[in-house]
Image (cartoon, rainbow, N blue to C red):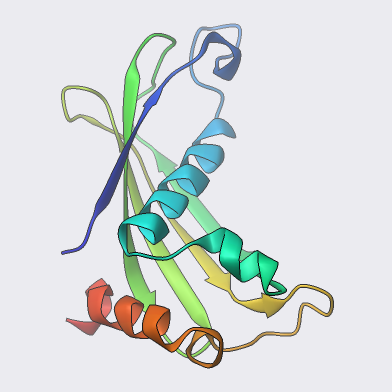
Length: 141
């Protein structure tokens, strides 16, 4: 399974008054993980934007398992769960340094024209990227 990993040092500003990582920061870490996965697969998300495309989130779910705190290092594991003509579903695990799962998540994205937000197939924009995602998607196996 093609899994990308990115370590993130948890900053004080990412925590709440209880010293626990504020829940919305996990979404930022997921974006960092997605960007790392795209890079590890040999592509650049910035190139899509330069060409006039964006990849908005259509659905997002997170299940929090074990709190993380300032000073820890989180590992974000990211993979492609499913990739079809118009949607890509990413899977995530956010881990403590000892491997304990802090959170699991999924996000569903489309590719769309930047100006109109009209959906477009990745196969029409970047056939190599589309083929790679079809190759590494967990559900396809």
